[in-house]
Image (cartoon, rainbow, N blue to C red; front, top):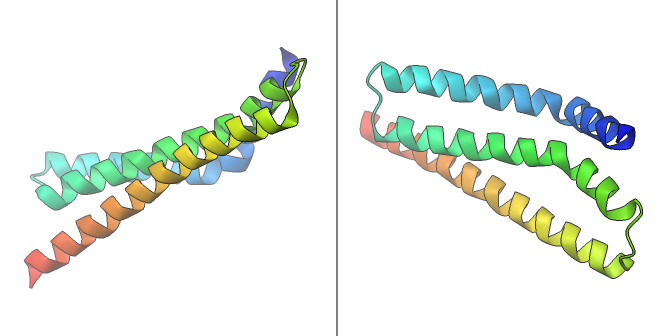
Length: 113
Protein backbone atom coordinates (compact mmCIF):
# COMPACT_ATOMS: atom_id res chain seq x y z
CA UNK A 1 0.00 0.00 0.00
CA UNK A 2 2.94 2.30 0.68
CA UNK A 3 4.03 1.88 -2.93
CA UNK A 4 0.73 3.29 -4.17
CA UNK A 5 0.89 6.23 -1.77
CA UNK A 6 4.39 7.05 -3.03
CA UNK A 7 3.21 7.08 -6.63
CA UNK A 8 0.23 9.29 -5.79
CA UNK A 9 2.49 11.75 -3.97
CA UNK A 10 4.91 11.67 -6.91
CA UNK A 11 2.04 12.28 -9.31
CA UNK A 12 0.82 15.21 -7.26
CA UNK A 13 4.29 16.73 -7.10
CA UNK A 14 4.87 16.37 -10.84
CA UNK A 15 1.38 17.57 -11.83
CA UNK A 16 0.93 20.04 -8.99
CA UNK A 17 1.52 23.38 -10.75
CA UNK A 18 -0.90 22.73 -13.65
CA UNK A 19 -3.43 21.28 -11.20
CA UNK A 20 -3.29 24.38 -8.99
CA UNK A 21 -3.46 26.62 -12.06
CA UNK A 22 -6.61 24.96 -13.39
CA UNK A 23 -8.25 25.04 -9.95
CA UNK A 24 -7.60 28.80 -9.78
CA UNK A 25 -8.92 29.20 -13.34
CA UNK A 26 -12.16 27.35 -12.48
CA UNK A 27 -12.66 29.51 -9.39
CA UNK A 28 -12.11 32.72 -11.37
CA UNK A 29 -14.51 31.64 -14.12
CA UNK A 30 -17.16 30.77 -11.54
CA UNK A 31 -16.75 34.27 -10.09
CA UNK A 32 -17.14 35.71 -13.60
CA UNK A 33 -20.32 33.68 -14.11
CA UNK A 34 -21.80 34.82 -10.82
CA UNK A 35 -21.25 38.44 -11.89
CA UNK A 36 -23.40 37.96 -14.98
CA UNK A 37 -21.25 36.09 -17.44
CA UNK A 38 -22.69 34.91 -20.72
CA UNK A 39 -22.16 32.12 -23.19
CA UNK A 40 -18.41 32.66 -23.45
CA UNK A 41 -17.95 32.28 -19.71
CA UNK A 42 -20.03 29.09 -19.63
CA UNK A 43 -17.92 27.55 -22.39
CA UNK A 44 -14.79 28.79 -20.60
CA UNK A 45 -15.95 27.00 -17.44
CA UNK A 46 -16.45 23.78 -19.39
CA UNK A 47 -12.98 24.09 -20.93
CA UNK A 48 -11.20 24.82 -17.66
CA UNK A 49 -13.09 21.99 -15.95
CA UNK A 50 -12.03 19.55 -18.68
CA UNK A 51 -8.42 20.63 -18.38
CA UNK A 52 -8.64 20.28 -14.59
CA UNK A 53 -9.94 16.74 -15.12
CA UNK A 54 -7.04 16.00 -17.44
CA UNK A 55 -4.62 17.22 -14.75
CA UNK A 56 -6.29 14.95 -12.21
CA UNK A 57 -5.85 12.01 -14.59
CA UNK A 58 -2.17 12.95 -14.87
CA UNK A 59 -1.89 12.56 -11.10
CA UNK A 60 -3.36 9.05 -11.34
CA UNK A 61 -1.20 7.84 -14.23
CA UNK A 62 1.82 6.73 -12.15
CA UNK A 63 -0.51 4.87 -9.76
CA UNK A 64 -2.16 3.03 -12.64
CA UNK A 65 1.25 2.01 -14.00
CA UNK A 66 2.28 0.72 -10.55
CA UNK A 67 -1.01 -1.10 -10.08
CA UNK A 68 -0.79 -2.78 -13.48
CA UNK A 69 2.82 -3.88 -13.16
CA UNK A 70 3.00 -4.90 -9.49
CA UNK A 71 2.07 -8.53 -8.94
CA UNK A 72 -0.11 -8.88 -12.02
CA UNK A 73 0.21 -11.74 -14.43
CA UNK A 74 -0.50 -9.61 -17.47
CA UNK A 75 1.59 -9.51 -20.60
CA UNK A 76 3.44 -6.32 -21.41
CA UNK A 77 1.26 -5.92 -24.49
CA UNK A 78 -1.89 -5.90 -22.35
CA UNK A 79 -0.41 -3.35 -19.96
CA UNK A 80 0.68 -1.14 -22.85
CA UNK A 81 -2.78 -1.44 -24.40
CA UNK A 82 -4.51 -0.35 -21.18
CA UNK A 83 -2.10 2.55 -20.72
CA UNK A 84 -2.56 3.55 -24.36
CA UNK A 85 -6.33 3.66 -23.99
CA UNK A 86 -5.99 5.66 -20.76
CA UNK A 87 -3.61 8.09 -22.49
CA UNK A 88 -5.95 8.41 -25.46
CA UNK A 89 -8.90 9.25 -23.20
CA UNK A 90 -6.76 11.76 -21.31
CA UNK A 91 -5.66 13.34 -24.59
CA UNK A 92 -9.22 13.60 -25.91
CA UNK A 93 -10.34 15.29 -22.70
CA UNK A 94 -7.45 17.76 -22.96
CA UNK A 95 -8.16 18.48 -26.62
CA UNK A 96 -11.84 19.08 -25.88
CA UNK A 97 -10.84 21.48 -23.11
CA UNK A 98 -8.52 23.42 -25.40
CA UNK A 99 -11.20 23.60 -28.09
CA UNK A 100 -13.65 24.99 -25.52
CA UNK A 101 -11.12 27.61 -24.41
CA UNK A 102 -10.43 28.72 -27.98
CA UNK A 103 -14.15 28.86 -28.76
CA UNK A 104 -14.87 30.87 -25.60
CA UNK A 105 -12.22 33.44 -26.49
CA UNK A 106 -13.46 33.55 -30.08
CA UNK A 107 -17.06 34.18 -28.94
CA UNK A 108 -15.91 36.86 -26.49
CA UNK A 109 -13.78 38.74 -29.02
CA UNK A 110 -16.40 38.36 -31.74
CA UNK A 111 -19.06 39.93 -29.51
CA UNK A 112 -16.69 42.77 -28.54
CA UNK A 113 -16.27 43.92 -32.14
